[in-house]
Image (cartoon, rainbow, N blue to C red):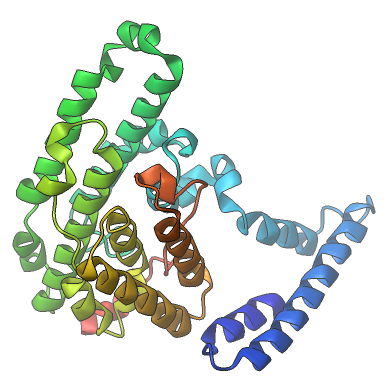
Length: 327
């Protein structure tokens, strides 16, 4: 708990307070070392290794690397793994088949809900699951070779290309932000803005993560990265903490482009992530900033080149967002 409090305080400090950040960081690592040492000592004692405090401590450490332990908590963390898979290499996605199998249940159980997770409209959340599954299929087919693809018709290039094009079409045309916002009891303009932000981010993710599967997903035919909607969303204090993922997607989508406009978008993304880190007291936006800056500097292209290892870039893990209804 001390480490959690110190980490929150460090992330709330501005870049101009480097001396304070350094001092707090030293305290953080000192307490982290004490926690690890204490757990080791308790685990070595047969009479103490099963007590609640030790189990809670072990779980806390495991959750710092949640992507490696998701199979054991997949039911509780399925929404988190869906967003995490969007910023992970296609060859290392977590439970894409399980997420797709659970989709009918999610649509039936939460179809009338205001939101499922991160304020992402459920129809778009469903498309994220499908995109992740397509990426996993394409990666598996590429690894297995042409012979295996021929024996599995569902993974043929033509079928994957058709499915990718259909997915983008549903995101851009079948989903209506206006209709989704109309279904909310109040704050229609806020819900409309959120829906448009997530629709744009989902379309960008679909285009850039699947463009190798279908010519129809060429960047020239996809939505142009633009910070306009996000600028409005980040001005809403009660909604901004849910916009880390759309900001990251915007930064990744402009990675392969060049020009003054792209430089301006990158500068916007950096400043937005710094502000989100300060607002939330979380290191997640700062990690995203480091990943994106490394990608931009590398000169590489492609979604997997940006996210060479699994990440989870969400700013609000809890799903209790009832206060948004009072906007």
